Length: 220
Image (cartoon, rainbow, N blue to C red; front, side, top):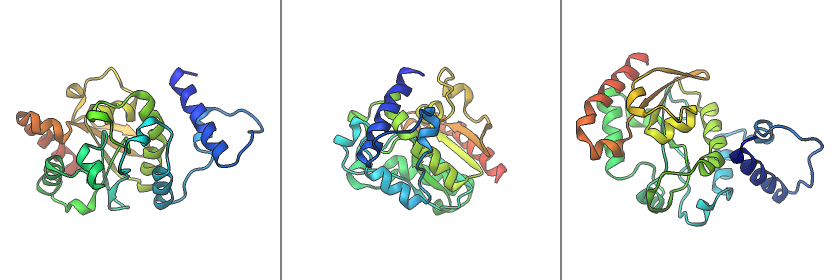
């Protein structure tokens, strides 16, 4: 068991103790512990996330950014972590990055933005919008995996390095070398591409994301 897994297990056991559990009859691997009490609906999962205090980000957040969109979406976009404006307003992908994402969906995929599901791999903002730590993502990952299982998208678009790396475990693969590649991800296909914030800083990369979105459209 890795150091991160030990931390996750310890925090999970604290959570179970807070729920009233006093002991487990036998030790089970972490993956089984995470699935011991899964939420049966997205609404239940949303409530669980709102009450989550598994990492220190819960202390500074103003809003939990859970996800929004079509609950039967064929396409699911997964970003990295909420920004300051999202934390302030409680609105997912607010601001210029959200406007750009909406244009990508409606002008390239040719579907209304309401027809997709959008979320982040992390549900709370990080201080100064820094890259989340592996421990922080580890605490949130069971939530995003349950969201994927409940939405059951045909295609998952991983927006940015953080989303791609932590969803796939391919930490040594730069996103610029893998973007646009169709990967197997359970029952879905996963396509990594650049994050809208990256495009705002590097407009020349828009043509690459355009090509990636055309690939997504061809698979619908």
